[in-house]
Length: 125
Image 1 (cartoon, rainbow, N blue to C red):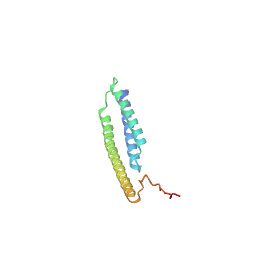
Image 2: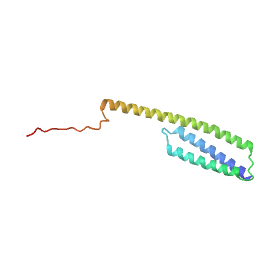
Image 3: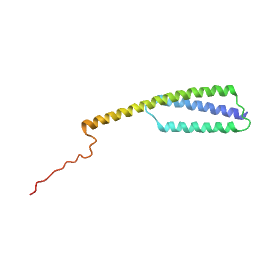
């Protein structure tokens, strides 16, 4: 029965992790790859702990409590996916805008010219 409390505790930590990540993604203006990688690592760590506890003897699930927490995790995780997709759409739009602006600048101001060296020819004396 000790494993049941541990699993439930880990599930609650996973829920807290997802909720915190949702808040971070909602509040940030730009995509933060390092923070998302950290989130993925912590999620993987919790998942591994659950797998170890599920494989050990004497772990019988408390269906109602685990079901409630897991449903909350699923809902929060779906929200996180939605917010991440919105951030990716913003990043994609910004990249397209930068490329368009770069094309305009290159077309009108010849910024991309590589050879802007002037050549002078002296007359033979």
